[in-house]
Image (cartoon, rainbow, N blue to C red; front, side, top):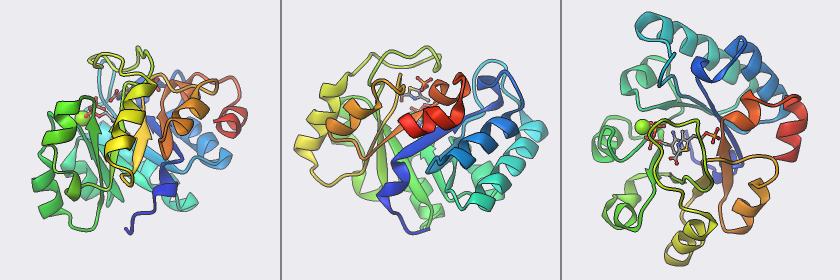
Length: 206
Ligand SMILES: Cc1ncc(COP(=O)(O)OP(=O)(O)O)c(N)n1
Ligand SMILES: Cc1nc(C(=O)O)sc1CCOP(=O)(O)O
Ligand SMILES: [Mg+2]
């Protein structure tokens, strides 16, 4: 899929472990409300494994296809291939980007960048966008790194004026604008949607 950074604008991430109701219903509302990308992140305590994970991924993938919203898979290269995902998001401890790019020349690849060292040592020329965070405090990711703050987005933007950046970690309706003003192309979020009283309203405000 050709990469257009506008898809990063409202990038929803979710797995069944993030939902207190049917994940398909949550995604359906988020798609109808106007999210611009979705990442299937079935990970952490309470997450589905094996065949159950694959079957849920298939259903969520179809929902995204119906709305023509890009579908990303977090970490799991095999599932990304099986579900014909548009893209894959990996972190510094996941499969190396060089291997993923060699295997999937046409998929969108996102890479997490949390420190200056990671920024300097990562093959940025092989990725389409970087996930930058945690910008604010989050309790959603069990092994989240130290809060980087909005200044981290400014710091990357000063060094790489054209790189596609999506901010992550503690992004809520009240602070999403500040991440964009700091230089991000978009915001990614979990609980801003999974814990929203009104998903349409949350996506509009984001
Ligand atoms: C858009 C986006 N940015 C960052 C991450 C975090 O990825 P990673 O560091 O690999 O951590 P896990 O999500 O795998 O726990 C992301 N998933 N998406
Ligand atoms: C999946 C993920 N990655 C992060 C990072 O900093 O790389 S923070 C995070 C969790 C984001 O959840 P919420 O929007 O509920 O804070
Ligand atoms: Mg990962």
